[in-house]
Image (cartoon, rainbow over all chains, first blue to last red; front, side):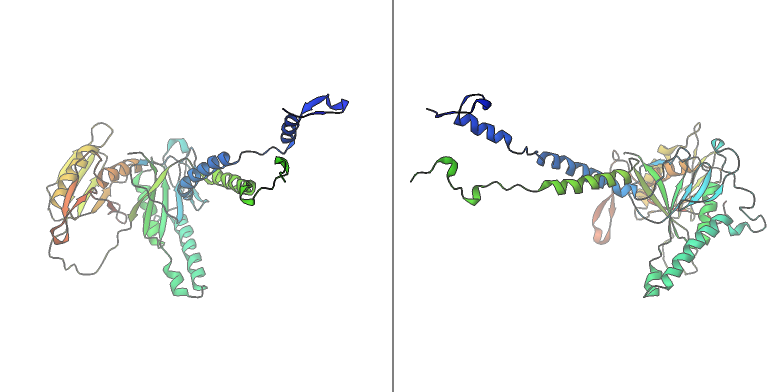
Length: 196
Length: 178
């Protein structure tokens, strides 16, 4: 039989010892169950880490750039990014030239003076200058490295081309030709992955 | 002497150890915020196309290379080989679209005859759209999952399964433009 204690009048009268123990437990600090929350967080982190590799290619989503879709296998990489959008051409986010006319017409007309009519074999001059400068910067850094020969070998010559799907091949060809003149050997065409 | 249950000593092993999860939670929440900022829901991939290089080295190979060439114009596609190892094939456009499926089937037939070749040269005219070129590259890269696998006889007569057609795409008219 439970022993009964007489409580002071302020506490409400007679209570059992068991009831007092229960009351004491309730007063203890409330412990949050974190384990299940941790499980959820870990799953979210894994999902985000999986998609992180894709985003590292620096795709700037814009309504002026619609990439073509392709069933090409997964491939990722780093390198200089050349973007041909409907209104301009950028190299590593620096605007190199803006197309003539309205971007909505998608004519991709180069501005006057971009190609020297007397020397078309020099390619698109502003793009050549921008790409050559990047290459020269790399060569300068390599020459200052402790082992310049090894540093110079790290030049891959990769260029990531993000072109709008309605660009005509003639412009892509001219840009590829210009990049080749500036010392870039490998073009990596960035496309939207289409599920097989 | 018997002790009251409340005053009994408990062994250390019976005590519950609470893992300090709060700092780990903090780290995870910070990591999620960083990854959410850096992530992109647009799934992209890369198609490699090397610049064609002119070589002055003499070719000592006895066999004539296939040099499979695709001429793409606004009217259609033409499949040729520099040494006439395959008959020329034309695939005129039907409406606005190229005949991707027929082009793909023709490439499968060529691959069965020349299983070791992996290179294809694209010679598009200047007015062809970039999107059409990417679709043509798709058609020439791989067998579809529903198509039967090709078997290539490798070194030592060992047969191996081949799902690629001509995955190495080179643009042949970057310099000339023709």
